[in-house]
Image (cartoon, rainbow, N blue to C red; front, side, top):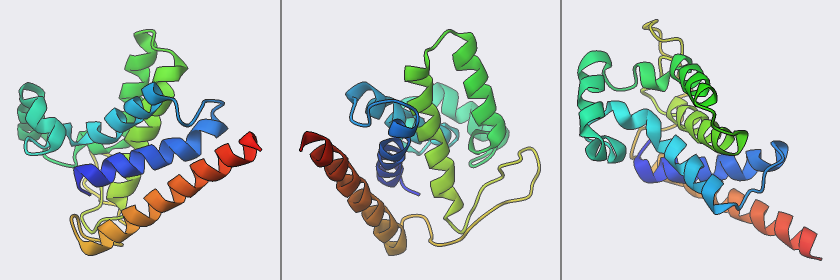
Length: 161
């Protein structure tokens, strides 16, 4: 999926996950961290939004592992969680980053390119609902954005009444 799609999917995922994790869904810091997490796997692509900003990391990753390699696997998810925990980050930071990161992987699973979730295995998993950048991707993301917006309105209107 494209960067904008990953942002929407990350925010929608956090909107859904936050109450289940005992966190506020509209906390600006958590939303920002979920957005960063949703962009982070594409650090292995020098032309991606994050790759262009972190070329010193992106280019070696791309040259060594390629796009949708290790950064798009469960190995990366576990490594990130271990490093963040080891560095003393709180759950208030780890949870939205992890949800955003996982949302990226879930979104890319919907594409025909799929992912190597069990990297270094070469086997790809894919649900193949859309092609990256397609009208179908836009429709899926728009539907998800609409759902998230309605969920937020419902949750906050119900509590406000």
